[in-house]
Length: 442
Image (cartoon, rainbow, N blue to C red; front, side, top):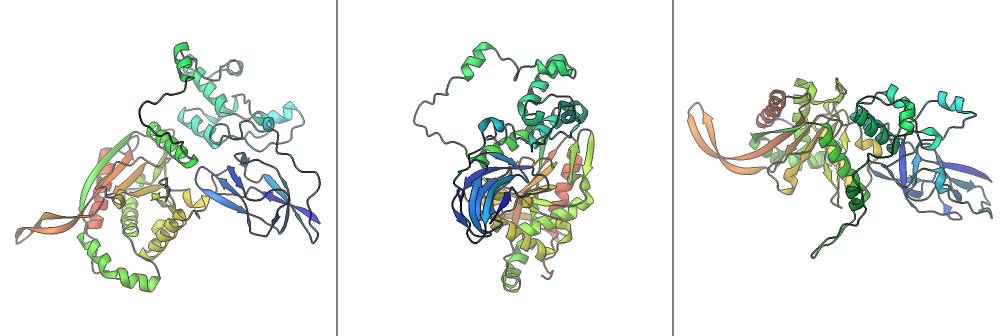
């Protein structure tokens, strides 16, 4: 008999920790290899963690709602022909061992490292949670400045409380704080007594109301949307395009395409194809901002906003969309959309996007003003396709015809994309859709 460690799996390049949502197994339960042991969540998606061995759960090391770094042992499995649970039932980690571990966004903790002395602790590499790094970037705090902020978290890490205290006092003094100043800083900026007392009072709602607690994903969406508005100077431009050729071509080939490829062809891959062609002409639309630097992304990874059955929104990413033909795009779009709706998206499926497409027309809207998906600098919305009478200009004269028309809109970060570039790109996409080759083969 032996013990096998079950560790928090790697969930994507940019994901450093995950929250335990639910344990499906408890100490004493038998488990098969690849059987689900627990559900976890990141700020991207929810995932299941399967068992890496067949045996009996010997010990569970973390509670539900604990935030656990990637690679940390979360449970032990006893394997062997006569696997049995020891009499000593494991105890959950002491609350004080993990600072506010039950709150994902508040103070995520980092893996503890053994230290022999204060001197060796200071010389070790400091870890920072994505939340702390994001606040530092928004507030213009350099890494050198961040290194000098004393941390009150486990192993001296900087928590959200520490960096907000630093920012608050830095704003008062107008310059970076010395270390001894930070130690004396209050946790939050002092508010008037009247405001403090009123904030502590519960909100009273009058009339016939229903109070609904936001779920975890809705809270994250709300935070990301507000953060985006605070980060980017949003501007939205609009264009109208005649997509008659595109609509007629799809109607003509969709049955043959599904029979040949086993996949339905929707409008989304056609839109993505047009976007990719235009980004190659205007590469700044696939970029991000780092301080006063513009980072142009050469890999074109197109995010597609997808509505979930519970009403929440997620953005799976088509990686290297410029290297896929129309059939490849259609399969990627369908696979990601199905995985999103069935809760089978992997964390890596939602990271690395460089530009986002959202289809507000799916729900009947003719246009929208989407919010930029950070750290990207642009997002395009397509509205519902409607038949309308339009004036058609020909060398023989003008005529009125029924056409399939669609509004498209582009929200972009005015810090680096001016109206001229934003509108030029949007009209390029419009022309690409209007000039769609209705005789192309599939």
